[in-house]
Length: 350
Ligand code: NAD
Ligand code: TYD
Image (cartoon, rainbow, N blue to C red; front, side, top):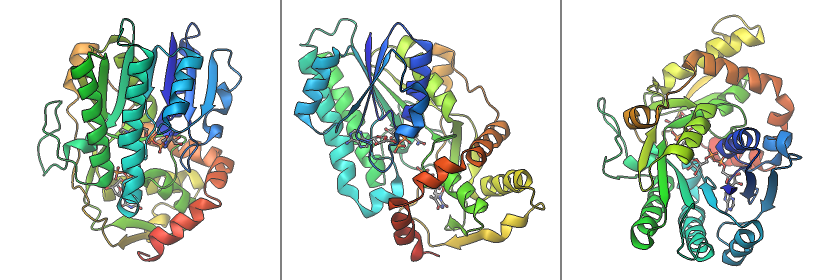
């Protein structure tokens, strides 16, 4: 099979590409990525010379470019991860989320439909989405696969729209599709605008840790390689037309998570316990900040046998170790553009 993975130079996509290249030498993996600020070929440097790997720098919104890539590589299956993915950026710049996440996904679907000429035997369009499409929970309850959509940020609204488009192509044209909605990921190669890598980087440099609001929002955290393994499972065994929720049953209030992060990081840096607590700085809350996300992942467990492999404390420890051992990567991605983003976003808060 020729498998096109979009967004493979980003955080989750790089782990999916790596797993597929190593595990399936009989398939060709084509990584398509625009290399935006979030995309970085260093994330997949280790597979760049693999015989079953190819890279295409291209924009999923570019209809002609997508047509020629589908033709050139005779694409059989798609795993679509390319997206604008950061809620804070979607609040300051919503339109790029609409063009990339909605129009980009629509463009890929249209090109897949044309290339496959409505003969869908052996084909698949796998769309990777987020639990944020379901909205925000109160103190109790979970997101199920049939929870009504209620997106509340420009990011989640654009992902919800893309999910709808994928289902519409499945329903209207009979295109084989599958969708998964996953909770918050953490692990190596995550861009340090998201909570965990940003805080690890700031602890290393003794910079303030900007906690939004009261720090009581809850997220359900999953190690990125477990997400990639779930994607592999769904790609091979998922039922066409279905949706699968993926999550770690691992809910943390932000402030509790931050305390655990500080404890582990201080220890690894040889600092006295609690030293970096002084860096905690409560700042203005995110606009429209969703209170709680929590996934019920019973369906993927019961039907496909997937469960997370890592306990959270172990995953967090591995993650911190990775950032401490890869300071050069961290330096590279936090120079230039990142500094401008950081100054603009946090200078009013800190
Ligand atoms: P990321 O921002 O790290 O990576 C996104 C990648 O997409 C980057 O490599 C970027 O260059 C590429 N890209 C952006 N616009 C593009 C375009 N127009 N054309 C081609 N490539 C483009 O994101 P991530 O955290 O790895 O998330 C990947 C996917 O998983 C997204 O669809 C996201 O919605 C979903 N998801 C993420 C999480 C999470 O916790 N990070 C959780 C659930 C679902
Ligand atoms: P984030 O990693 O941006 O993921 P998402 O918003 O998609 O869940 O944020 C995780 C949580 O951490 C969220 O509740 C917002 C909070 N947060 C902060 O308190 N400070 C920060 O600087 C960032 C980036 C996030």
